[in-house]
Length: 121
Image 1 (cartoon, rainbow, N blue to C red):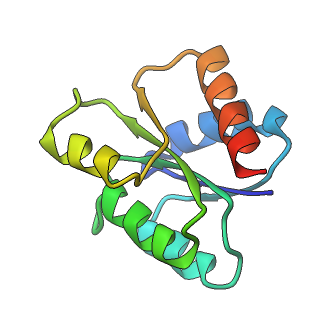
Image 2: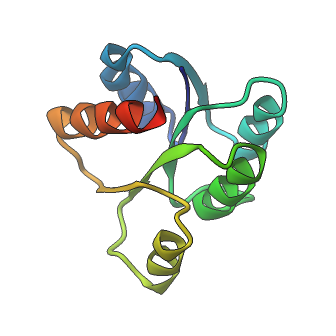
């Protein structure tokens, strides 16, 4: 099980990596969505935890492109924003399975990630 974590904030990225380690997946972290997309071409992720606000490519666009590579991808979208029309449309398109607001509780992200792992199996 391969899990991609994508967030442009290095502190958030480190925190996510530490919090998601207990899930038991092979973790790959990226600050740059383009780097994550490039890596996905050779190491297809089963799961993705992606920030909504990313530079050069939105988290939703990254998920859209990752889903083109792996239609069975399970994803968690993390955002500090309230749900908006763009997020609602992405949910309708099934771009992500879980929406998690910042700040999150450690137990909450681990629980949601375990749910995704179960769905991906």
